[in-house]
Image (cartoon, rainbow, N blue to C red):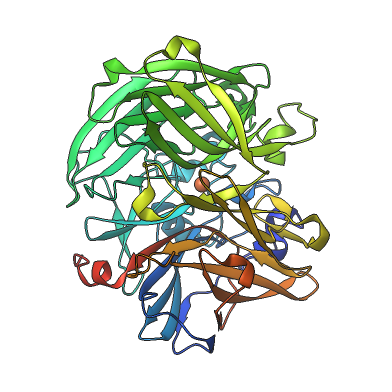
Amino acid sequence: MSVDTTYPDTVHYRGLNRPTHIEGSAHDLHVEGRIPPEVDGAFFRAIHDPAYPPRFENDVVLSRDGMISKIEFKNGRVSTGIRYVQTDRFLAEREAGRALFGFYRNPYSDDPSVAGVSRTVANTTPYFHGGRLFISKEDGLPYRLDPEGLGTIGKWDYDGQLRSETLTAHPKVDPETGELFLFGYEADGLASTKVAYCVISPNGELISEQWFDAPYCGMQHDFAVTQTHAVFLVYPTIADLEGMKEGGPHWIHHQERESWIAVMPRYGSVEDLVWIKGPAGVHSFHVMNAFNEGSKLHVDQCLFNTNFFPFVMEPSGIDMQVEGALTRWTVDLDDVAAGVASEVLGPFCEMPIVPVADIGRPYSRGWYLTLDPGKITMLANGPSEVVFNCLQRISFPDRSIASFSQGPGIGFNEPVHIASRDPGHGGWLVMMIDRVIAEDHCAQEVWILEADAIANGPIAKVRMPFTTCEQVHGWWVPRNALEQAIPA
Ligand SMILES: [Fe+2]
């Protein structure tokens, strides 16, 4: 039986979205410069790379199969490996030699032979907790992976204890307690308003799972956990069940509908959830950080005036200039009736990070990607045709911004921050670089930058032996955590 390997000529399959199908490993990679001794561990990255052409030509990048990529640093030596996540979906399609699952998050468009099979592609975020490596996408359960060989161990439901059918791709680990905080939306099925909020012990046991209803079934890609509160963010990109049955998209953005922010004590009851109306029409995928300041609760996020995915805007009938900014939403917990105060902190941005030790706490700096319009590179990646070419660092409380941009011909991916053992040093950023080497083709390098001196550029570069598809999110696992990984 022959296999069709012809992919649609759309943004979703060109440039950095061109399928590679590559799996393998390579050792003692070429290093220029000096790798700091604290950069000792593994940089795990989620990659999306479809194993088969899509069932429908107009499917979107978010449906692509997940891969786990590892770049391991040990005593100044660097190795890499990449493997497909062997999801139920991947295995079913590998068996058939073709795509069986249809449109992004629309099971009505699937081949009838896979009815009831998990649709998730585990392509968004790798994370490590309780001695275990996971990779997740928000429409299903995470998969546990072997951090050494990158093999797939299987779906993870906390020994059958978890009731939710989904878990977020933006988990929060408390840096002091080691607890993992999770939520899942569409927790009991397609277009459901049910949301599950879960607390996991430092050694990986489900401590609590509480369910509540969101005001509508909106996209909830990220959330926040401060030292005192859990914060849920609901934006008006709303599941369209009737549309899905007609072959339409999962999401329709409602520009006129309000957004919502909900807060509850992080160890409290969902009965204590307080819902506060936010501005209409806005959307955010990513929170940079959230923290308490007296009775104030701040949520710093990459906020946009609409859902900027073209494949959401178009079926939603939205034709407007996309605008965004790093934005602080503030709620006064002593006066929630006052609503949400909104304040611009920085420019249009995406893929924000903070030091792991600062998650949920007052913080002094964060990093994010944005565009330097003078150095633009047009190259398909994810849902976009322009690559991020500028890394910025924002400092608090002065809100000064440092920039490092490259190009044309260079693209940046979300970095990870690695702390220094020297409290007077700000640590390092490790970031994958896409370098255009021919029309629509890239080579890749890993760059290491001083986190508090990004404008100086990289102190070390690692030449990658092969080029992967675009990275989504990454996660740094230090050596001591890797060594304590629990065997499968
Ligand atoms: Fe994300």
